[in-house]
Structures are given as structure tokens and as C-alpha cells.
Image (cartoon, protein in one colour):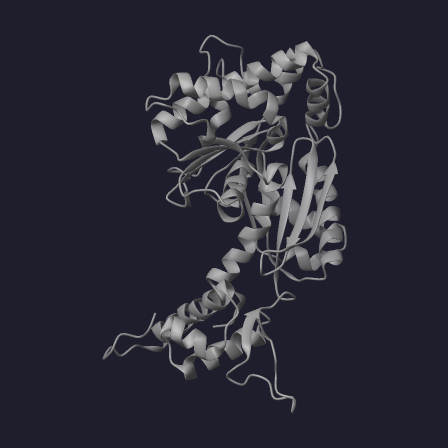
Length: 405
Ligand SMILES: [Zn+2]
């Protein structure tokens, strides 16, 4: 992003230019450690400009000098490689699940430094009480990581629109209209972490964050449908390497795609939604395990592995419903792959055959290739990883946000 020849720019646009160039230099260093001369060659900026921008990035703790320095102790000479600072600002991810809480800290390179998951039944609990437990988990994770987070992103199992992180509805939690950041901040202060309460807080639907994690870390293609199934069923639609959010940010409500219009009443008010056939409650009921507490995915895997007929039939039914809904999405969007994530990734041996059969029977462009349906290797960790890594990616995309420019 060099200044065009002959264009005179005022202070405001010069500042904007410097900020853009800062991002350009950091991006080159993030892709691979390299010397100032190599950064200059890579970006087309002058050596002097790169040196000045690199000093700024070093001062802000984003970049460190790696590799050999001279024995006289001189650092910063041309041959010294610059790399991302593993002790620099980190990304803090948080997750509120129906049956768990999560906290994760990644460093600037996206390496997971700390990840905690706490099994806890949040269904029907008051948001304030859940936020206190979450704040405690976050405080511990950040302290253990030794990093200073640049921001916090919260993954939630519900509708989060584009407007300011308000959780409009999370049927499986029983929550409506919860301003997430405003609810979390006092909890962070209450557990003795006023510095975390000052962080920029963003919130997103857990399936969206799981889909982004799949895109960034899962080695997926540019076009895919990510189906996240656990207590609720959601999805992320990735088109051309970007998340499709829809007009108001609510795209991807896969769990409420109708499977049978005359089916059971859903929490959303409609009949026969996918969630009524493939959601936790429906599967456990069908399996004869309606009163189960704790890690029910593990229990289903155990019982299915032991060949328990009712469980096998329940999972085949869920797989079939997932396949019917997925086939509709495939016909509509033509994704390269359908990726099954969330807790259900663990139930692959029992869900996928029925899903594949429905896809093969219903996808219009034939033959359906079975390998287009696969499970995410990130499994249950996807949403939390997506939350934490997203914070770091935002810093790398615009380091001037930290006040550098
Ligand atoms: Zn519904």
C-alpha cells in the first residue's frame, strides 16, 4: 500500500497510510519470520519505512527479533529475522454452552497456551450466575497463560445479531435479550479481574465461530457448510473463504430447517424442525435415556459402541434428519464439503452412514461423493478456538488498533 506518486496527502490520510503499512509489514512477518530487507522486498516499501514500522511493532510488543545477533550485542542489524512475539498480546476466547463453559488463550501465532473446559449444566440458570462462573474460568486461564489479551470473544449457543453482541435468544439456555458484554464485565470485576473487564468484548454464535475455526485451522476448502450439532443444531455457511452472515447476522439457523412440517413443536414455535429429530433432547428421548446428566455425547458413544439397539436406532434417525436438511443446503449452496463439528463429531460411526444415504438420494448433482461429508478434526474445540484465534487475527489485520499508528 504505497503512496501513489505525485499525490499529496494530508495528516489524516498519512496516518491512515501508516496504519495500513503497519498491517502490511506485520502480515509479511506473520506469514514467515524474515529480515527487514526481506520485508521491504516482499511489501515494496522502502528499507527506511520498514525499519521505522518494525520499530513501532517491536515497541508495541507484537514483533521480536529472532535468530542470531552479533557477539557485540548489536541487535536489529539487517540480517536479523523478525518474528511474531510469542509473549505479545494474546487472544482470549470464552464459551457458554448448554452443558459447559470454556476458556482459551492463544498467542499471537495462534498457538493454544491454555484451554479449559468445565462441565456445568447452564440450562435455565440466570445469566448473572453463569457469567460469574465464566469470569472465574477466564481469570484463571489468563493468569496461567501469562499473556495479556488484546480482546475477548464469547461463543454462545443462540442468536447474536449484527447489532452489538446482544444474545437475542438461546432456547436451550432459556435466555432472551441478554446484553452479553454488559453482563460479563461486572462478573469479571467481581472475581478480581478489572483489567479483563476493560477488554473489547465481542460475541458470536458458536456455530459461526466453529466454522471460522474450520476455515482458519481445519484445512477446509473455501466453500463449505459446517454443521455444529450438540445440544442445539447450528451451522456456518462459508462461501469463498468468508462467513455468510445474512442481512442481519442471523444466517445459519440450520437447527430450524423443517424436516417434517407436521412434526413435533419446536422451542422456536414452528413444527418439525431438524432440532426436534437431531438435537440432544430428541436423541436421548429416542434412545430411552431422557434423564441423563453429564457428558451425554460420551454416554451415547459408549452405548452405541456396545451395540445397544435403541441407541443405534436413535443415532441413525438423527443422522437421517441431518442428511435430509444437509441435502437441501447442498442443493441450494453447492458447497465443496459438508463438515460435521461440535460434540456429534464423536458420534461419526453411527451418524455418518445415514447422513450419506440421504445426501446420496437427495443431492441433485450426481453422483454424491461420500468424501464430501467429513467430521471436523477440531471436534468440540472449534467454537472456542475460533473465538480466541479471531481476536489475534483482528490484531494482525490492524495492529494500529492497539494505538501503534
Ligand atoms: Zn425450531
